Image 1 (spheres, rainbow, N blue to C red):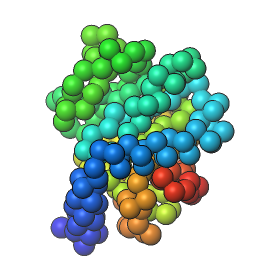
Image 2: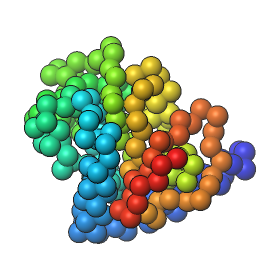
Image 3: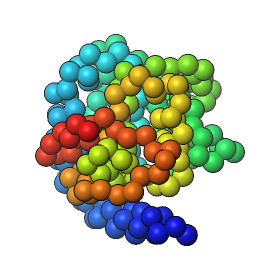
Amino acid sequence: MHPTDTHKSKLRKKLLATRAELGPAERAHKSLRILSALRSTPQWASAREVLLYMPIKNEVDIRPVLDELWGRGVRLLLPRCRPKEPGQMDIACVTASQELVPGMYGIQEPCPERCPTLEKCAPDVILVPGVGFDLTGARLGFGAGFYDRFLAGNCASNAIRFGLAYEFQLVEKFEADPWDVPMHAIITEDRIIWT
């Protein structure tokens, strides 16, 4: 194992343990502050198509913006993991919360029968979860490469990428892999860091 892999593995374990300790009230409070900062950006205000994620394992809770986006007439996209293709995900358009069903890893995903996979998409904004981020915009995920592959593709090429994280998930610097796609900004409960 490469020394960088060992460092990332230890960092991932530490950050996940800290995140697991967040209580529901603290998580909700911090998440709402992060969403408030997100709403203050002109990119969010003008977005017509947004790719989000459904939170798991105490990730920043973006669910409060779902109804807001639908109310604004924004096209809301969500990922769906491919069951027999590890590390691959498809994108589907969701028009109501009733179209979400439990998918891989227990994540709420677009129902395959009601939300067909999109051949093309062009989100203006992508909200990206992460285990950790550094101040250059590099992202530390769970290690399966789902977002790395998607963010490197054509669908994501013109989007503003916002990494959403709690302040404790920020580290000064870690060694990014060559295939990592950096965030344009990291939003925490305390600040927005444009990279």
